[in-house]
Amino acid sequence: MKNRILFLMAAFAALFNINAQNESDTKVILITLDGFRWQELFTGADSLLIGNKDYVHDAGMLKKAFWRDTSKERRVALMPFFWNQVEKMGQIHGNRNLGSKVDLTNSMWFSYPGYNEILTGTADDNRIKSNEKIPNPNSTVLERYNNTDQGRGKVAAFGSWDVFPFIINEERSGVPVNAGFESATENLSDREIFLNQLQQQIPSPWGSVRLDAFTHHYALEHMKKEHPKLVYISYGETDDFAHDGDYQAYLKSANNTDGLIKEIWEFTQQDEFYKDQTVFLITTDHGRGTQPLDTWRSHGSDIKGAGAVWAIVFGKDIKPNGEIEREEQLYSNQLAPTILKMLGMPISKEIEGEPIKL
Ligand SMILES: [Zn+2]
Image (cartoon, rainbow, N blue to C red; front, side):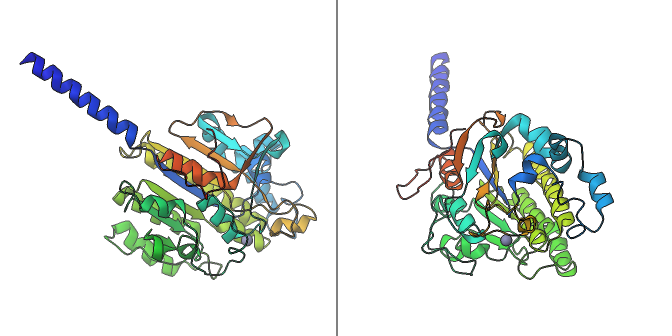
């Protein structure tokens, strides 16, 4: 009898080991901040812009919130979660002042080509060359994962910009995308009912992009209810406030988004499904200009420096290397294969990027 119990225990142990090796239990949360510059991420508020009447209407308030003597203090003031917590537990790539570079491989340097590159692992300059609402001919990692047994129905995307249903090709991929001014539709929680109501009653400054708090809370409510294993959240305000030439709103939005991401992180750490099992990847779809000064508002292939981006990774099995202070060259097309690897998926040959060694 005793032997039989020992045998069964050994058999169970073997079974669980096999499962642990074959199927990744890693969950991935990919987050983007549209057009947020590496300059503000690594050095905080820009001295040439923060007191500039062309771009700021209350410089006193803005300086009190975000101006400090050193760039290290300024970046902590702007993004306290990133620089107090994420730097200790993860990796922050893209400080070009220290030699760490992250670049786009597409040559367009605007949103749809940027998101296509991040989500598919391959730039497609021949076909993805506008922001028009064209169903993406390429497969994103969201679609690939949704087409596997372990990922089917376990993927969800949330975006502030109303082009995401096309970038992710919601119709072909079957990946649910809540973007633009869409409401939550299924199995609604009380908070989702309230969000749907508020979204009608808090006008967005823009026609095709909603305020990020809606995108954020739709994502969070969905994660609480459905526990997807792969989640994409695309915040959009930073790009639109920059196009508007409103540096005050751009900084406040970046600071706010840092807090939203902290909230997602803290939710995952008190939820049994996500706790200690989840990796966060955070990046941007393009950079912006610096010279002449007014090009901070713009991006695109004619704006010098707009192909320079950044990438942050933290969570399960990520080495806490902090801010990368050595020479390196990463590319945005490496994020998709990195995600596939984390999920235990094959990286097919047509994907150009190589997984990042983390
Ligand atoms: Zn833009």
